[in-house]
Length: 203
Image 1 (cartoon, rainbow, N blue to C red):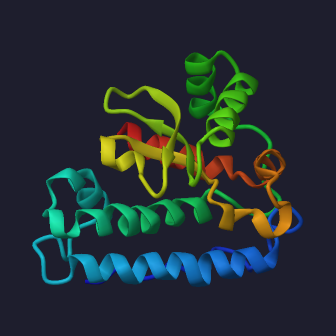
Image 2 (image 1 turned 90 degrees about the vertical axis):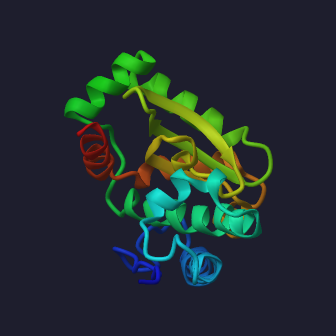
């Protein structure tokens, strides 16, 4: 069954003033839709058609060379954006609680230290890419950036929280101010969803 563009769990203008409606319409309706269409086209008729995106991206280096690049770029773009929309929402922000908060404090020293490390990873990612909080194969929390549409899934990690730092994610509102975008983006993070991701990944 082909992958479909997921609907946003909120209106296009719901993330104002931190992310503007025009950016959301283009980002979801054009960019994410394009990744979805090209991802389906890349795997159509191959042994990977019908498999989960996690399985496909987890084996990206084993894919036939003729489709590997298209799957890395478009499968990554499909999965990354699917997570991105879900971990954001209006009236969000704040700080995590419970097991996730404890794990962040244990791994990074404090929530503030985690935020600084995460924001630095995203802000200093050269060119297009993403900033991530992920759980590695040993069950440890990791913060890092990836280039283009590379996903933590490609290295056997489970992405818990991701922020898009491609220019199309922020340029209409912030221009070259990636740092301002990231600072405001924290107001949109749904820590309840990130905590659910963490609990599911720990099982």
